[in-house]
Length: 334
Image (cartoon, rainbow, N blue to C red; front, side):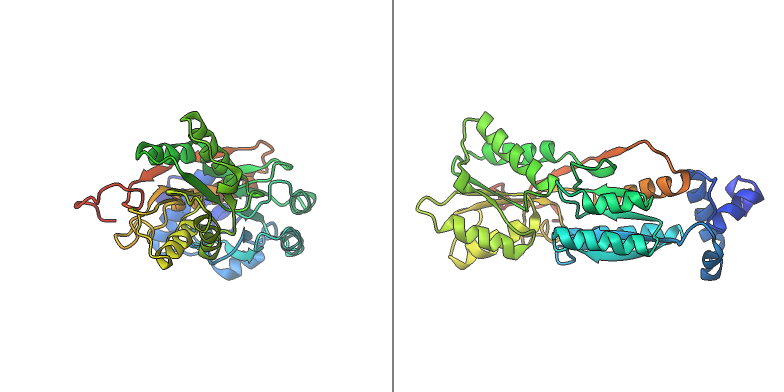
């Protein structure tokens, strides 16, 4: 196997026994060859590893939003390839829950943590991990108080692109609905929505800027508030696909047609959102790439104990559906 991987037998031994001193790229190459040849790191070998528990934590706000379950599934796949298990915990976007989970993961002596549920002004949970010298990586959102590796998209650029597309349809009565503002991703998207519209001469007043829960129920609640006003918007720009779906569902209960009576666009690019059934115009995040990059950065910290901070910004795409008013593409496989 050493010859097939182009490394020394000692390097193979280090990798298969979970020892440090091997670069991430070499480790991946050896494990890929091992998988091809049918070799596996046994649980018995892992348990004898004196340095690693071979368990990482993954903290997400919930497992209702498919964006989080998508990240979780890809992270579990990536970690399994490296012989790690994943402890998944949800916070429901509660600061106390996040702090308790961080303490629990520290007590379990996990090798590292991927955090997709960071709160902008939170420091307690991150300080707990730092005090226990547990590496962590922010995914999608981060704390402004504690630095750390980050994987995400350029939320401001993506939100601006989405708003420009909506403005291109000629809409002037526009509302925005985002997730909680204690999420750096949600806040960045809202700020970019409003700023981009303002630069085009369109003012989005405070009552038309709604923050809600990151699920369809939150979107429905926001839509109820916006669409019951004396001057309901003609277009609603959302910072999440699940929020957008909730908006669309409530609009349909009122007998409104999408997009003829109300245009709705989202952000995330979930597969069902882009289906022909829903046809949502949305920003597509590269879920698999982000998940694998987050674990790669975490594994790099685990194996090298570096002190530098890396921010990895992944490319996003604008998917054009029909929910914004664009015509259906007969050749699209939405």
